[in-house]
Image (tube, rainbow, N blue to C red):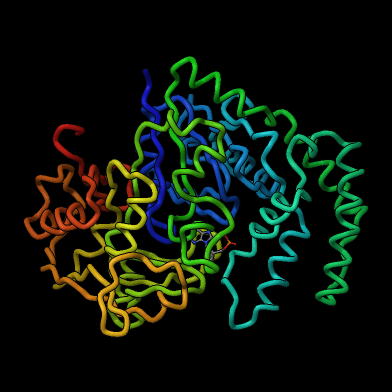
Amino acid sequence: MAQNLLVLGLQWGDEGKGKVIDALSSGFDIIVRFQGGANAGHTVHVGQEKFVLHLLPSGILRPGKLCVIGNGVVADPECLLEEIEALRGRSIQVSPDNLAVSDRAHVVMPYHKLLDGLQEAALGKGRIGTTRRGIGPCYADQAARLGLRFAELVQPERLERRLRALIEMKNREVTLLYGAEPLDADKVCAQYREYGERLRPYVRDTVALLSEAVRRGRSILLEGAQGTLLDVNFGTYPYVTSSNVTAGGAAVGSGIPPTRIDRVLGVVKAYCTRVGDGPFPTEQDNETGRLLRERGHEYGATTGRPRRCGWLDAVALRHAVAINGVTSIALMLTDVLSALKTIKACTAYELDGRRVADFPADAEVLARVRPVYEEFPGWQSDISPVRLIDDLPRAARDYVAAVERIAGAPVQMVSVGPERDQIARRRADA
Ligand code: IMP
């Protein structure tokens, strides 16, 4: 029977999942996104070309693969259409033959984006630092049963009826609560009718499609967005995104049963980054952080914001490995560390003079912990041509072994540069 694989981030997102998925997708029939929306930004380098994908699964760059936007995604139709057109303009085929959008996926509306910005402004210093893509308000509407799904988007009369009622409600919130300008219902309805017309050919019952695919033994790769520490349940709440980023979310957001997710590949950056606000115990707001940012090109793929940079955090990593049932690890951006004489990793926290073994639930507690570091010698050489983990310099192999020890899971691949082929693998997999 085909083995299905889940690939997800074990930190605060931006771990390099796009590259891992691109490297692995050739071995799968179907690639599925199951959560998040256009807040994600997956960067893939193919030859001299760079692709940044927000909603489309990274597998779209491989001909002959079926890509699915699952029921757990909140999709902005404007962004989706723009992405489809942009890829077509670069001679990448996107058609209903290789892209299906779930009829159960929720539609991001202009009022979601507007409210995202208004709520952030109202929070002031306590803001989340969202991408302002309307993600939180859209998931909130799903839970409040006020959402509009793709099944409705593609039925013009039903869309008009529901959308007018929803805009009236949301306009009251926008004007009375926030004192902002209301949305023009006629304009929004006309615009979304047009999006519905254009997207109709892609909208399908992807739950039935994927059930049938599982039954027929087709191989499926589930593509996570964001990272475990941004999960709405297990992350640094409230400084999180609004979806279930973790392994349980893959089943909920796709309809693929948990018993048919055979392996979980956790993607980890060799150091750590975070965009947006919230605690980050190993943050290096200093020369080291700046060096990591410049060498790692650590600027948001979606918003262009500079990412906060710091050392690998083993306490957070163990939490992520446990929650997701990680079976192996991809260690990314390892070449970024090549310039360093000494590399640090946080192996424990201290709080008020006491060791803390578990990742705290409370963001205010996490903000107060003091990281305890282990130091590793750097390798200070160019590792970008290396293709076997065994051929890495001794110090780099020792760092990889330390990550395995810390995480309690084997490192299956080590990224040594941004290009598609710059990956070192285990001899057995190469
Ligand atoms: P939202 O998902 O736009 O609501 O943002 C909530 C938090 O998640 C903010 O800290 C964002 O910076 C962060 N976030 C959302 N998507 C990503 C991503 O793809 N990579 C990294 N951080 C993200």
